[in-house]
Each structure stands twice: as C-alpha cells, then as structure tokens.
Length: 89
Image (cartoon, rainbow, N blue to C red; front, side, top):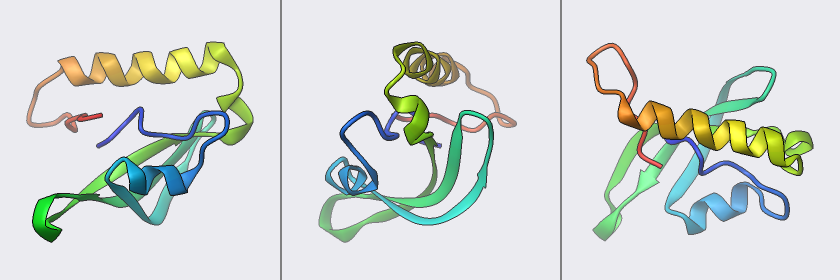
C-alpha cells in the first residue's frame, strides 16, 4: 500500500503519475479518504500492483487531517508482519 502519496491542496491524481504511481480503479472509501487499486511505475517500464490511499479533497486543506493522514502512514511504515500490508510512501 502506498499512503501519503495522496492528494493535498493544489494537487490531484495527475500528480501521482509524476510521483511514479497510476490510479487504476477505486476499491472503496471511508470517512477520511479513498483506496484505489494502482500501479507503481518503475524503471524500464516495470509495473508493480499496489493500493493507493488518497485523502478526501475536502479534507486536504485542513492541516489537522493532513497530519493525521501522514502520521497514519508513518506509523504503518514501521510495522512489519505477514498479515499487515506494507506501506512504502
């Protein structure tokens, strides 16, 4: 899963491509954001399937929600277990 690559004020899904990710289709949504099936675009055309969590655009301008979103990703990056999805960004 890639967290923290999500939208922020003044950005959108088009910015994800610049960061090396592409949205494929939406998997679901919750109170704070959406999760998309996506692809990590690598060197020489390599593609790795991934999940991408985006903060809701309506919340992206709120510093408190952005901080919660980033903190969630940061904490998840520290976890490592076969039953926990890996967070890269």
